[in-house]
Length: 633
Image (cartoon, rainbow, N blue to C red; front, side, top):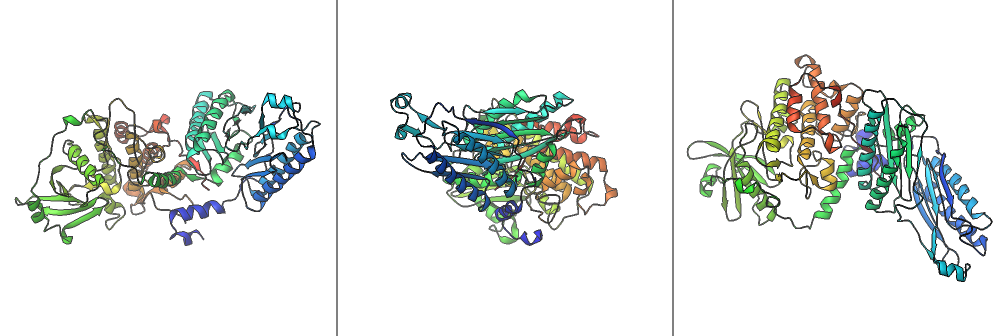
């Protein structure tokens, strides 16, 4: 059935997929974690039937939203003025089925009614279960007003509380089972909770799940996080930070939960009874972080559409003054060399202009890149970037800029000519299948060496920002040369990263850059890891393999196969099994996954990648961790 959705736009497919995934756990998860009524002697209600009636109306409304509208989150309000309004918020875990969500609501509603039925009814209460959370109005009252007349309801300050993230009732619940290898377990647990803390506030539904294997143990840690839908992203982040801090007391236990007014955070080991439940959540309703990056990218593009762009080369660049200017070419000479930029001489075209084959007067063949004729500041910035940077970097795995030309609005760059064009044609295009395994390995190693020079060996750190197969050119010997530095940035020596507007190509973009605009050399390393997987598989990273049970994206498919020990099934089917070393292929797939890990700090530097590529195998301490898995509604 899925093959019928191949033609749908990506966001439509995601919407369809998430709407068809139902809860995977037939259990409303009603283990009580915490319940509280406001002190019964703090509020007095002259007629408890008003409270009870309004409360029942909100419950009826919320039940309908869950059952009929298939919602996992609902709010309701009934009554106004002196009629003692009741505000109610309910949320169940997104992985529960609607039937289980309704069941959890009924149980939590019954618990709340105990507060309302107390001798001196209390207008505020909350109940937290494993599977759901309900809260009714906490109200604030001036002590003076209360003393004057406790029955004057108009003196109460009603608060809908729906946007509250943290309150004094934050809590934590730890399991009672412990695990061996406490150090490895603690490290893995911290990583998944940190990943969730960072990622959950960026997801439209404020719900995320992930898992990670504990080194040298056979056990797996599952975790998920959820915030209420009515708080802000910043409120969600603050709430999860508090929950993360509270969960530190749960070590060395294999299970822990933290909760507050605006969020719920939990981890569980596969060795505990609940491990399978959380594992079902992760496996049943999750998509990879690549999809998160998609939504973040779209959101940032809309938000930044009208933001003025500054000159990204002139900010924080202490090394720029050391760069030498390029050789200049006559515009008329380049017109002649390219036959007036004729179609027959066109080699390709990108977002900023076209590239033409040109023959200079001395017979030298060159590639001439003519940027789009425009007064656009963006075009001028790209021109300046390439001229100043590429003219000064010299490495066998970087394309060489021969010179430039600037005449009026015409901005032209002249490069060394690459007869074999770009790598994507050999991986996905007409020449697909023509590269041997040895040639693919040399290309993977050559790209790594070129990036090492940019990141670690040049006198200033250069971040390319757009590493992809289209921007890798191949010389006569099929050796790779990194090209197209129009988006490049210099990274100041005293900074670990810079914050900047998103640029690059979706699918190759690192999550921290796509979501937060935090740019470092690790963004290039992430892109490199994606390119490695493309070279090995012969598949495009952005293609949705919706008819493939192994996953919706190349990165997810690679991880799933790695996790099952079936690395070689990722291999390009145009290569015969007897022409490559299976263990070497496995190692390089793992290196690609190391480079695409969600955590920036766990990605290796490019010099380390070069060393790993030349080693026989990876050490046990260098096993990749799983990308964050999420559900997007």
